[in-house]
Length: 98
Image 1 (cartoon, rainbow, N blue to C red):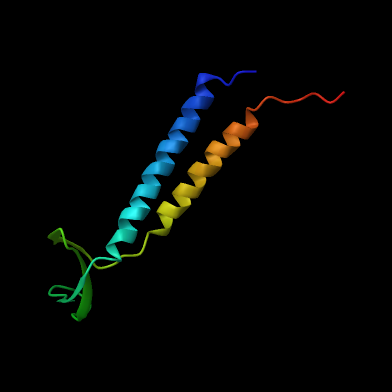
Image 2: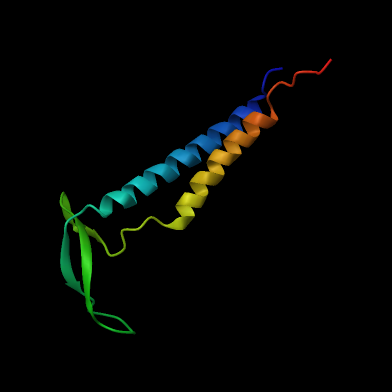
């Protein structure tokens, strides 16, 4: 039994979603290795304090305060992988027991 085009479309969508999530996670992980400098919050409705700023050494105008990967991207990656595996398993040819 051959898999239909719809199965391949779902698997391709899952693969693209997984690749996109993995690339985002990798990009965020890279920011943790960027050099840091002390920074100051100059406008805040709560407090103003010294902070650590991670900046891109190739483009110092690009910087982040939080270099941790968002949990949502990890969830998205796992769901995409489960989607692909589930569709693949659900559409595999079955062997009949005799």
